[in-house]
Amino acid sequence: MKPVRTRFAPSPTGFLHVGGVRTALFAWLVAKQASGKFILRIEDTDKNREVAESEQHIMQSLKWLGIEWDEGPDKEGSYGPYKQSERLATYKQWAIKLIDSGRAYADPYTAEQMDAFRQEARDNKQPFLFRNHRPENPPIWDGSMPLRFKSDPKTYSWHDAVMGDLHTGPEVVDDFIIMKSDGYPTYNFAHIVDDYEMKITHVIRSQEFIASVPKFLNLYEALEIEHPILATVPFVMAPDGRKKLGKRDGAKDILDYKREGYLPEALINFMALLGWNDGTEQEIFTVEELIEKFDLARVQKSGAKFDDQRLLWMNGTYIRNLNIDRLIDEVKDFWPASAEVYDIEYKREVLRLVQDRLKFFAELPSLTTFFFEDLTVDTSLISNNKNLKDLPNDKLAELLTISQDKLSNTTFKADDLSQCLNDLLTATDSKPAVLFSVLRIATTQAPFSPGLAETLAVLGKERSLGRIKQQIETLHGALD
Image (cartoon, rainbow, N blue to C red; front, side):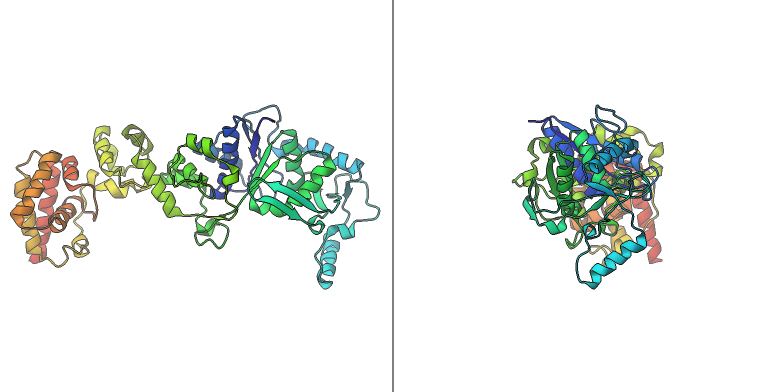
């Protein structure tokens, strides 16, 4: 058995989104499971589409997720360089090898001539095949014009580790460009050379490349090299399941999830389950469990729907299971501005209360601002509450006045507050949905909050009673 070596080979043409990172994750899991090596290779041969700083963005995204590579642009190994723009001499050597064996030729045609060939095929209602227009006496290739691979059309059958046994006829094998006139190789040529020289054992890539596999196999044969294990992962689909996930459907920059306060381990778990499962009902996996259980044979052949609500649920589950010390560290950049003057112990108490409700860290201000600043009374909170909207203001003011008096005589510890609130239900002959709702609104100016007794305890006696007084005054003001 060869040592397992997998790779992720993105082009620096924009940000990474879920589809691309899932491919990297699957390759990383295969390598880690076999105690092999995971390689990051930057395929920067399309200079017209290259985006500044994209390479750094790719690396930052993978590092944040914990998908660390063993060899790459910043971790030199025995098979570098790991950027294709630094390997041009290598591609030229392999191109010359194909020329010498009669399997590559210079393409002398102009764009206008190519258009004429394509139009001819359309007029004849035939598919366009370049091999039908090979020049009889091609010029010597000097790098000033494209170099094409001379295909040998044939039937192919091969095994894909995900898709199973596949088969195509000779009609899909055509001549294709392997070296461009700018001196850079095409993807179709460069990745085969690189995978061979870097001793890659598994090529895991997206479904968009599956139609090109026959011509890759033809090139492997011409180069007299053995192809690696091929594994084609299906597309990540838009939520409606009808098309490949795109920016309009929620394919965000991976680092946007970091900025919004998602946990990397939750995102890893979510992406692993996009098209894979271990045959059980388990949904929450540690990274260690994923490494142990992942199997390409259990990756589904059909597309996997992107479900942002499932991701939100999963992230919330991970947040609930964090210990408070890590949670404090994770949310340090997400507190509302008004929290800055409060000490860490007070923030710790606030976090303990909202941890079960927190689904991503960017919503921390909306859940906690009332703990740090007194908010203006919002009368719509009562008018929009189904349990309070039909009660007259004087009745609501009466409930709050009785509550204010009883609460002022408690220690404002959570247990005492719970007992006091239960006693108030009897004293006011009220229901929890009414009494607790009006108290919650008065003390938090929010439609929802953590447990009322615990919230009051953290707010403290002076602040809680002061807010109840303010709400009573507002209700009386509405009566005048």
